[in-house]
Length: 368
Image 1 (tube, helix red, strand yellow):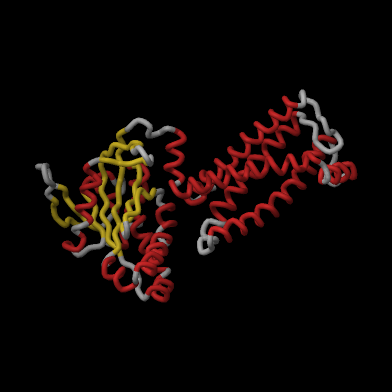
Image 2 (cartoon, helix red, strand yellow):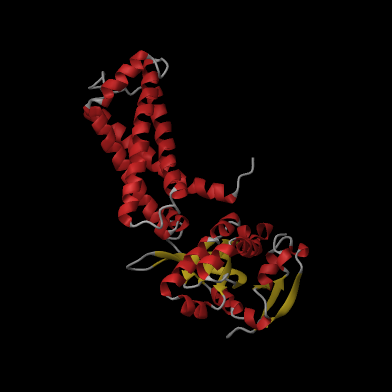
């Protein structure tokens, strides 16, 4: 079964939530077991920790954690953006309160049925669940769930601001030491942004940028791209070389962004009185990647490829085209013979004797 890149991205983003719940759950179980001498102090209201119960609890923690991740990153991601912080907190509190009450009852009944070796609706299970709901054990469970939920929401907030991939790289230490990589970069810039900003005003222009960037999200995700930076009205998208040349993803991304904005042209026209247009350049080369910063850490890329891409993007108006890519990228594409492209000219770089050859492609040839 083939799943979309967006599915795999969402799975990779929600899986850490499951790990957070699983590890903290194990810590709570271990602490309670040690503190009680591995005895069930409240056998009438709580469940004795046997191996089958432990396996079920571990599986339930993983699933519940991932469910919280799905709600936080997929369901609520773009649905609460228009609300104030106070309302966001209130709505999330109500949603998670209802969810946790349901989970507590269902999980306890299932775990009790495993402990007693009967079905979840057996009278013994119902009686024990009723006693549990009025005991101090319930309070202890609520405190644990609140702590796990707090960690999950904290992780979500950090991930949202830093970016999932950057946060993952920090945790794994991938770029603690600088390393060389071959990467593809796309510099994509909105046309006539200065005059648009003047005509719309600061607040309306900000809303335009938000809608403009939102419309690119699926195109970037579905072509395995990563957003490196937002710089005003310009976005820098990057791929590892293998991902970017596979199925011509880096070229396909440009076309998919164009299609997405075209599909929302009526919304843009209604809200802002215009349809944003853009131009882009794509280049491939070697960069040094690593963590940098004293007051604020971030992963950055350094190398001639970024400067070259920026200069190439500045030539779009001169060549009267919306997309320019370099010969380095062209030669890396495994299916370049299927692309209808033509030579534009050469770019002389300061301090270098070798010129960069530039090309563009027909729009209907991006998705090869």
